[in-house]
Image (tube, rainbow, N blue to C red; front, side, top):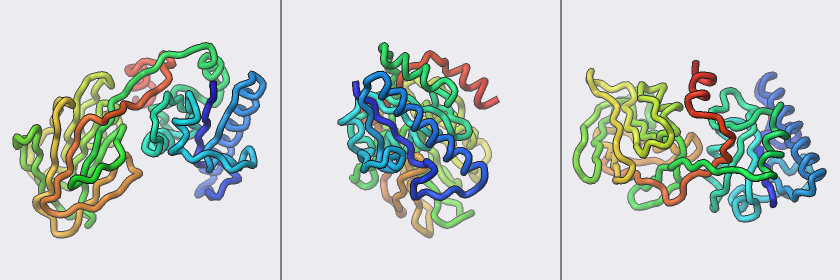
Amino acid sequence: MRIGIVSYYVRGSEYEPKTEDHARRLDESRAVVERLLEFLDEHGVEAVVNEEAAVVVDSDGVPVSDMGEVADVVLTVGGDGTVLRTLSHMHEPVPILCINTGRVGFLAGATPEDALEKVSEILDGYDVEKRERLGVEVEGETLPPALNETVIVTSRPAKIMGFDVYHNDELVESIRSDGVVVATPTGSTAYSMSAGGPIVEPHVESRLVVPLAPFRMGVAPWVLGSDRRTTVVPTRVDKPATVVIDGDEYVEVGRGDEVRFKRAEHDALFVDTGDTFFEKVRSKLS
């Protein structure tokens, strides 16, 4: 077995801490990476690290895009953003275990304290949990898939927009709002929830469409089937709008441009650590 380790923010890399708390988390991330490398070496397991974390081993590292081709399992050290960024850039999906050194860590399966125990269990065998992702297409151009959500918002702050939402080419609703969130069940506990969307169990095959600050009262979120195509078309916009995929990828669109969503070809894969979804909701979101 070969294990990949991905961490974008470790003390000693080119990334500079912004606050005292941030510096502490960078130090913690580096310490976790060092402990993982030492542990894997002691157990005779080959490890590869991404380029940003390569400062820990004083080597060139492996691009995250190639990590799925050279590793059987990937350990991410960071928060949910690290998981989303890793999934977005990996060409070949492999199971991920997130060791949380961020704030909430809803996608995490381990803490710095029990990380070695979890990795030891992986070496003895593990189950894989699949999470569906959003395939995103703008005017025929395929963009990276989203695990959490895609947000369409005006590039001009506080400027209301119009959107036509279609499901399998049938008009669902015309909305005037600050934007629209299109989310997966996994993303139902992220931006979608903050915007008033429902919490959905991850294995329910569905897609959420949640208006951001709608102009008209009574405009409710929609839960649609993920086996069909959903299209969002900006209709009232004076300036370009921005499509944001998992907070990492940005693309501008204009009036009449079609933003299409379907179930992505490849699901995201996670090492199943036995933590239940409802336990995480109670402990992380209460």
